[in-house]
Length: 353
Image (cartoon, rainbow, N blue to C red; front, side):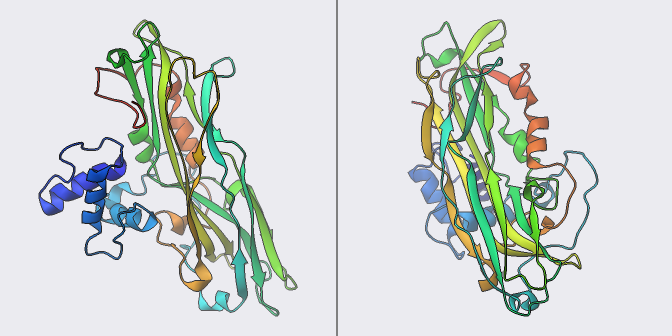
């Protein structure tokens, strides 16, 4: 939906026309959105109608105001500033012969309500795990260089749910409630997924005799939705969820002098959408696999180092993506400030019938 709104803004500001006149920003990628994407891509280096990393970068740079891109309003300790990270220099290329990683693609699942709070989780059926390796050339001078993983939460997060009055028929959308923290989260992103220099604080250090350096990665992101809720004196059950999380992940190094370099990067995201019918909430449901946008080899010049926030690789401090989410989303699990009663047809998750 953020992409659609950006296309609407760009069309009005640049072209003076509404690119989505029929359906607007409805969260569904149909023919109208496809035409709008292709219209935006005209005259650029992309012309495939696909909203991939290249198109998202273009939208981010052209449409989203620069003062809102970093949005670091989460408090916390002052960030430990380091030199801005970028692709490897010629000197690093002369010492690192190659890098490698193979990323599996677990599936996204929705769990049944569990625990005292009866929360529903949108998560992965197994952790996302891989090993990143850098092979070093004989006689390299990288003694003391630290190698590790960096992960960035991108500003395309979606966190949305629909709750329905338990006394109303399941198909009666007139008694539904919209809970949406999407914009509140996006305003705080991008943000590192860790407060340490490297993801999970894990890194390995090269020695003068190292032939290669490897780093293990493990992640199991989870989005949580509470059910049931008491809204305006009525009990409301979870009727639909829509959750998307986007990441930029990099394998890189910091020299003993403190200079950071990205070596290999990739984009990945998890998306789950479900219109929950009567009796289905108690049964777990499996969605599709995580989305992968390939990997980019910085040694060969395809680094994607211009991703917003990627230059903070090698620094520490500041709020992490998880801390920002926990600080932003408590309303989602308690209170009615973010619960908006709506009438039929005014709100639904994109997968709802």
